[in-house]
Image 1 (cartoon, one colour):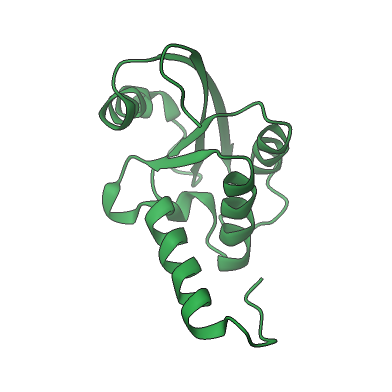
Image 2: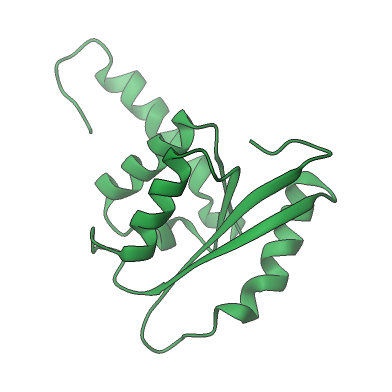
Length: 138
């Protein structure tokens, strides 16, 4: 959770395909989006960069990011879009649940494909259509 007046720990998760290796070109967008969302703050930025498939559950930097979140070392995750997190819904939901349990916000530069909004819609869908049944989505 981002707290005003403190140095907030930000993770920029950037997963790219093999054609585009330049994560630095997105750093201005990351800072602009953070300021848009939270106003001017002090940020301690960590970069989690990898060239990998979004369907691969064994992504080194993705798993390192999850471990940092679980260890309460991250306050907010910034990524380009929800699909950057994972192309597999199970992996996406697992990641978002880890973040939710640790009060870590997930902010996407591409607001149309915002991970937090997608996660909330899925949670609402589960609650509305599966609550009280023995069917699970996890």
